[in-house]
Length: 222
Image 1 (tube, rainbow, N blue to C red):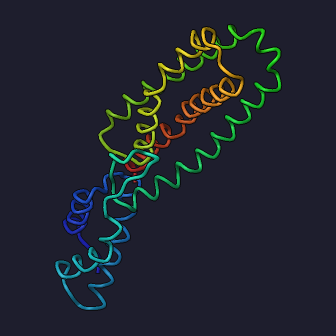
Image 2 (image 1 turned 90 degrees about the horizontal axis):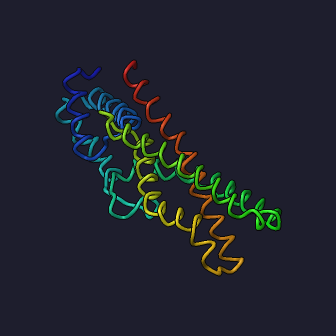
Image 3 (image 1 turned 120 degrees about the vertical axis):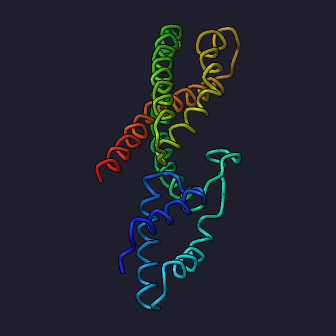
């Protein structure tokens, strides 16, 4: 028994009230629930009004609001969405951490040369980071103006907000703090790693940005 448009709309409205607002997962979850409702209506010869609450009860635990240290404990979402976002973000973090370690290792290999050209190195790094931050800010505004939400848009916004907290500290360090303070070599290389990490995070954000609008385009024509 196929559900009609009104019944599908009821399921969609309930999902949105439960916090399932990211379209890249909302319609996937909606499709699963609708299929289960249809099967229950056929097998038990019951109405939609009887079948839907039973199926929803089965899914209820997956809609429990949860948070993660990755995105901040103040941000809560249904557990089923949170787990999917964490899975995506962990893969990205692994790549970014690896890239930052490679860049830091390169700095260590050429430390004697870079130490003699430290001012030029940090001037270039400042420009690159500033450009990356500016592009990230433009992307943030465009995603905020999107009429629909996606998990990729959420990940992009969370990462951008985190980068704002450290941007000015990094720029200070690169332009004055490094030269005026007698940092230990370990601390200096640690800061190089942090700078590399956040720069790569900014660059990698483009993937989330692109995926966000691809999902919106796909939903428009599906």
